[in-house]
Structure formats: structure tokens, C-alpha cells
Length: 468
Image 1 (tube, rainbow, N blue to C red):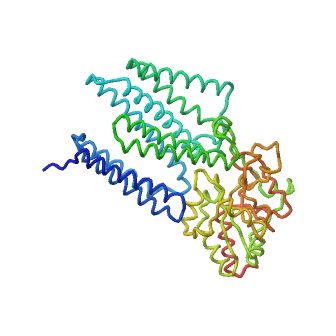
Image 2: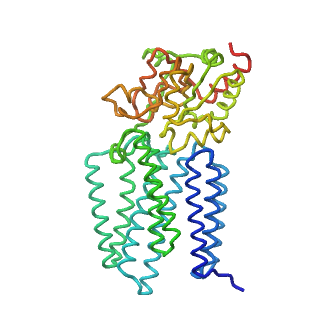
Image 3: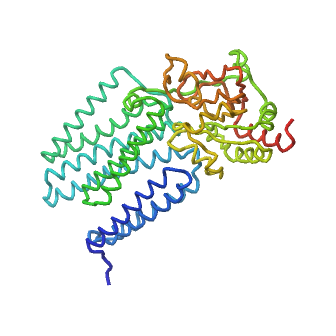
């Protein structure tokens, strides 16, 4: 007996899935509930897939099974092998898959409906939207992946007339989309698709590394709208709901992150802010030449083991060095000595939203010791030590003191107010924004050069051995 859901039961299953997805988003708003949120999301997706496969519209399971098995194997292998440092580029890659899926579904639907003679203006408009949004999402995500992976330079790639070119491509793409919707012209479909692919690339190449967290969030929003457009094409209500949830949540998150940087979304997209760190140098020599004090592991341990409060500021350097587990061990050793230890998180630290929270959670650092910027900033002035691990721009006083700085106005973690600041860095090179950090030159700041994980492990050994 063939098991098939009738439309009413399928709609009910989709409603349950949609509710679970809303609970998932709610759970993902805080690290302590994120695991539960993920479970809600997986359960909702499982119900959605099952309800879709049991729908009357599915005629043959053979190709679906083959594609599902291939996708599952690839996903499992990637999930098992991926390093947390590579999570931002994985997210960008997954966004590109959603974009390309939207393009392929729209083109496939057009071919099928054209052969059946059932094309209409409303459907053509839906196909146009799905193709344009999906294509922009695909190439934009590919460029973001290449920048994050180091395949392309993280610096903004800019040229004369760039904004005018983007505007021209955008206008032509919209005009072709309207013409295609009105006429069903194949050549308009091809040109529209190609131009949308180009526009996705030209929009993202001027984006520098400092703005990459916002861009990842924006691409997440684009992928949601691409999915929603596909939902209209396939007359799938759940896909429309989920796409809208992702689209709106990504857009809201992008807005929140822009506020955290005191910049507009247009400034992020068209500003071309952020450069690669420059070439190699001799860290100690450059520091001495610039009048920056360098310190040893033992100096930092001397301060921390007798401190009342230590605040740790993690950044992308911690992610690259995979130093979070060593930080957990150091935290436990300090707490055993009666030292209060907290972690300060800036909204745009790392390469994607929540990057630092995920890394610290991976090391099982308690959520109640991980505080956001607004919560932790008043505590820096009562901290004996601020330990900055691979962060840079998010603690740079230039954002408050230098009106000529490109990061002026961006709220920062006020690490410089601690009695003593120790910076863990590989070199004197600036952060992804390319802006020199004024905190390096404060009287209460010292830099410890070297790999963050090696340095923290050295601190752990010193603490175990009784420090100084």
C-alpha cells in the first residue's frame, strides 16, 4: 500500500515544522539555549523533508535517494573534518549552494512549464526573482569563501567607476528580468542570469576583511530570500515561510552588527573597508622602534596569578591558533587561585556572527563567564589584567579618539581601562581594517609576541609551576 499524505496533512506537518523553526531561531539567540535551538531546527527540517517526500507531487524516489545519499555523505565528511577556524568559509559555501539551487530550480521549472505550455506572467516574475537573487547569492558567497579561505586577497578590490558599473549591471539585470517575465524570452533569461552572476561578484570584491562578519550575515539573508522565491515557484508554503524567516533574521542581524560598528549597511557594502595585514617583520624590533613595550609570558603570569579580576578578549587570532582549549585550562588554574575570570565578546569579533561564542563553547567555557560588549565594558576599569588574544580593531581606542580614523565611532571593548593590558600577537601588523592600534602605545600595555596557543600553554605551565 502506497503511503501518501493528503494536502491537509502535509499542510499540518509544514505548520509544525514552521513552529519548530521559530523555536530554533529563538534558541539560537543565546549560547545557553543554542543546542536546544539546533535540535528544534533539525526536528523541524526532518518533519519538513518527510512531509515533502510523502506528498502526491513526488512521482519517483530514485534520483531523490541518490542525491540525498551523496549530499548526506558529503555533509557528514565535512562536518567531521571541518575546523572551527574554517566555519565562516563553510557558512559562505553553504550559502552559495542555496543560491545555485534557487537558480537551477527556476530554470528547470521554466523548461518544464514551457514544454507543458503553462507559463504565465506571475510565474515568470517568480522565476526572475529566484534566478536574480540566487545568482547574486551564489557568486557573492563564492567570493566571500575565497577571501576567507585566503584564495583571494582579503583586501578590498576597487577600481575606477566600480559603483557606476554595479549600478549599470543592476539596472540591466532588472530590465531583462521584467522583459523575461513579460515575454518568456530565452535570450533574456540567459543574459539576466549571467549578469546576476557577475553582479554577485562585483558587489562583494570591494568588501574588506574587517566587514566580512556583516557580509556573511547579509549573504545569509540573501539565501533566505532565494529560498522564499523558490517556494513561490514550487508552491511550497513551508519554503516561503522558512525563506522569509532566514531572510528577515539575516537582515536584522546585519543591521545590529552595523550598529555595533557605527556604520550604515550602505557604507559596508560600498565602503571597501579593510585590508590585508602586510608582509613579514621582526616583531620585537618593530615594537621597539615604535616605542611599544614587549613582555614575556612570565611577566603576564606575575600579574594574573595575584589579580582579583582578569578579562580575556578573544579575537580571530585565537581562532587561527586554536587557543580556546588552552585558555580554558588557564582560566581554571586562575580560578583555583581565587581570580575572577571573564571573557569579553565584541559583536563583530572573528569572521562571522557569534564566531567567538562558538569557539569558547567548543572549549566548554561556562556561558555565564562570556559577556557581550555592553555587559562587560563597565568591568574593565575594575580589572587588574585585560588579556587580548588575537583581537585588534575591536579594542582600538582610535575608534573613540581619532576623528580621522576609518573606524572612528565604532563602539569598542574598553580593554585599555584595565590596570594592565597584555596583547598576544604574532607581529606588529595591524588588524584586518589596516588601522594601527593606539592601545599598543598606552603606558599600561605590553605585547607578547608569538603564536597565541603556544603563549597560553606557556602561561599554563608557569601557573602550574607556581608562576614566578
